[in-house]
Figure 1 (tube, rainbow, N blue to C red):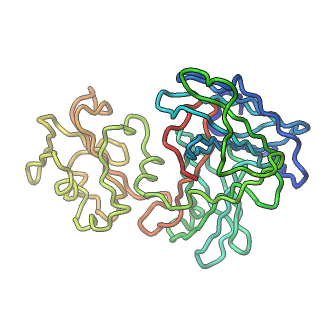
Figure 2: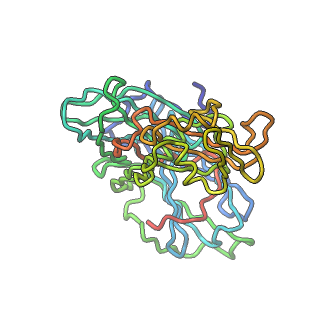
Figure 3: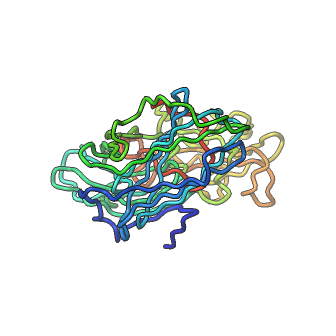
Length: 378
């Protein structure tokens, strides 16, 4: 798979799987294209670490504004180098910034623990990225239930789903995870730079900057261990993201989520559920029902295959994972007119019993991105 310095979507680095080093890291060199920026400018970051060919690492940036607000970003370093660009929007607060750079000598790593009783030797792992990439692999589970999922590059957030092998995937699965980004015992190379963002350059040199995060030894900053995003995600959203394809991925859809709302499992059939829950859809007729939405006919789909409305009466509510409603015009219909109802049945370990096996995890900052305007107050 090709990797470029301007864009990455999903990269698995099996070659570097064992490259985490305990040695003192090489000196970090950071170059910016300039130190004074205006709205619309680009902050170009060029980071290099000497004597690091054939290794991987993570470059951390904590950008601190003079009023104490801070933003955290991170990028992968491949072969001791990283090039990233931050676009300066109009909404970014003006003033002086201190950029704290630090290095972690490995990439994204997830540590997990299987808490389900019984002997489990492996898991099926599915990673779904914000860019729409899907990567499926098998993860080995140790005798104590622990496992590691590591050396994966992806931008922004992703969802990771763990399921049992096919012959056991109907069994409940209880997992806990943490994504430890750092270790307090490993020294880091670090560097601090001051920049200014505003319409005009300040007169003279930049004023003295009082930082909440300053380390007395800038040449060897150490980041504290951080655990992020180990909260299980909504199963209905996870199911929708994994199994919806093509035109069924519609921004205007409305979802009835039975995986996370057991109170909806009261009806006898999927058709009865649609009658009760699909606001705006008018269903008339008994033995030969028909449906309209805003005066247009409604088409029906089961697992994205076109079906008759009567077929929904044959599907027990207990078998339904989610139902998606598409207001007219739905372009997945023949001719692109009318609304649609899509029923998805349970599968792939995503049922109402598997409530602790899907998680949102935080990935890397895009190599080209807008400077964040909603700060994480650290």
